[in-house]
Image 1 (spheres, rainbow, N blue to C red):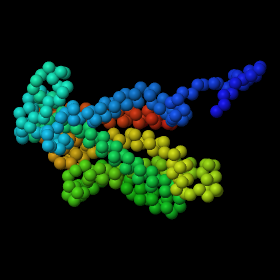
Image 2 (image 1 turned 45 degrees about the horizontal axis):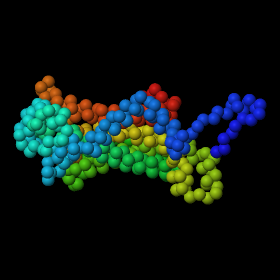
Image 3 (image 1 turned 60 degrees about the horizontal axis):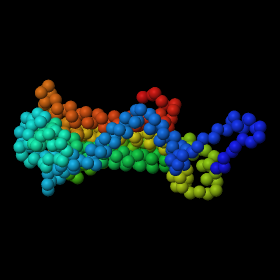
Image 4 (image 1 turned 30 degrees about the horizontal axis):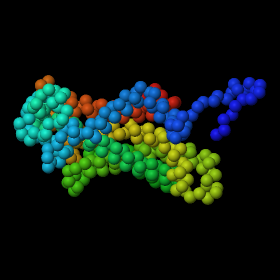
Length: 346
């Protein structure tokens, strides 16, 4: 774009036109995306959220170095130091099935014996190992379920809003019926039905959360598309004969998707919480699988003795809280940047 410079005594043009240098990053991202990125980076809450998410990404990527798995064993299976039911305190030395000592342990602690840093739970499952490798499980389940539900919700809500009429009525009535069901209870029932058929794994729980998690996205994207599809550029595209699919996915959805993306950013933590709740109830993965909800489930029989065995609840609980907090802080900041009218609302 040619730079406009005031000439002569044109003081009015000089006062009204401000010349601002545009950097390479802004030129690459575009003005709107650059505004969103800078808004997120300048917000203290989002900065803390990104730090927390980055911390967990670091743990997930370097899990084999932080907590080396046993050779020839599934790394997601938490090592057991015996079979005793009584939890053992933090700092207890390994006796059986001791994994390889990580390279960082001796320089940081000055000890030569590999110990249970965070203690063991019921059944002698190592809590530290379960938390470290459970980070990978949290990322996989949270992002996969959120992406799947977001995709289904966008497609269903977009088709419903764009075509309207009887198509919209049928789809929205189905959505209304599904929304009546309590989400976590419905997912629990479906996962319990799928587990005997599929087997204990991540799939039954993830499939249940996907089946009952897309309706909110479809309602939000539908409301935004109902307003966007009446704008002039959409009407012009229809007049010149552009295909419905191209109008919908090229012109309408990109201009109506931001509120839905905000909801998705907030939902990642919610999905991880729901998955942990189902794991806590014994639905889904096998016993001993590295999942934060299952690590917490080992404390069910010791609730009345938490004054002694507090570590079997505190460490996985704090980890889960910090992980969810990271996504919530980023989601709240993203909502404020995209829609300033929502700033300060919960």
